Length: 128
Image (cartoon, rainbow, N blue to C red; front, side, top):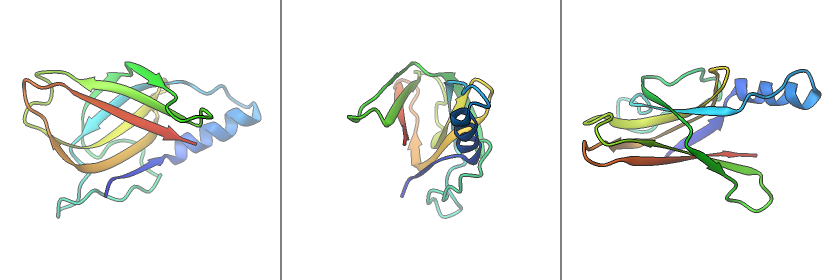
């Protein structure tokens, strides 16, 4: 089963921003890797203490975002792995990074194979 979490770093930044001690940097990057599964091929359980992907393969700018849930307590970020990128790789983890380069949200899932001629669009929700 896929697992996702807002990291401890992300929570700490939210706390400090709410208190007025810092300005929250925006989510600017999505990254993918192939280190999100254990030896048995099952998604690793997320802890919230992750500071990076286990094996990051690619990072790209966020293409767009939206608020898909009424009440605007979920923000959906979108980015695409283009044709020719990560060909033959089995993607099993992804993360959202802010402008400071910190991992804010992290997710693991069953491996998804990447074909050369097929772009893959990924959505990742930050849920509050």
